[in-house]
View 1 (spheres, protein in one colour):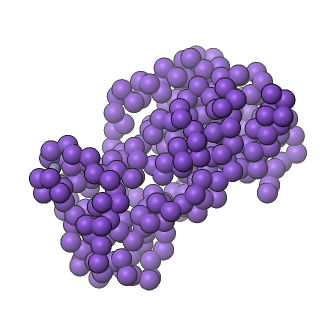
View 2 (cartoon, rainbow, N blue to C red):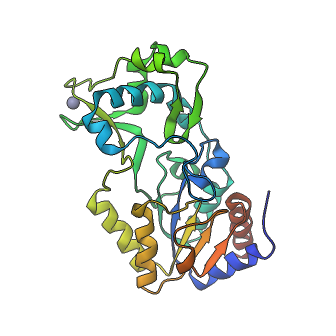
Length: 279
Ligand SMILES: [Zn+2]
């Protein structure tokens, strides 16, 4: 529980000055739910780099690696629970403070905490799309299709973000890759991997929300990836104030009006409950 002095007042003032916010969240908000982040406080990779979009599409061996690791890692995301930061944002939405909640996370924890105005910028891990026929499958159905395979029993794995784990090579080589139950085509999680492109209508609805809002609140992201950073740039162009809650450096620090380094969970909970008491 780490709240820096004055951060509650400063965030509350920001919310007061910007009654309708676009909130942009990154991996840092799900850390307290047991889902690791990609980068350290300086914005550097903490682990090996995650799979890239083109690798998944073009290299069968990378797909095999992906699914072997995901078979072991998916239950960690599936069973993760929203934390106080997710719940506080749902409360702020109920209070009318949230125009839209853009998340770079694929874990669906905002929705499970009760937020309704969520845009899953990078997609969602609980769905799998067939690249041939376009059918959408639940990730859990694919898990069942893969069950009983060797990597599921591996005990030497360590968790990585987004349902990925580090896994010894022998488990990867033995992996039988799942396919579409309708057409046997190549399937892919319904997420935008690194190097992939966010669908244009999705980006536009985020941009529209930024234009309608009074300000932008960034939580738990170093904004290293352009797909999230562009909303900060747009907010700045439109003269909308930006507040950032993140312990480490972010790419938007120099265009933000407010930078708070407190833990986002206790800080948001405190501010949301103070405002609830006033309603
Ligand atoms: Zn198919």
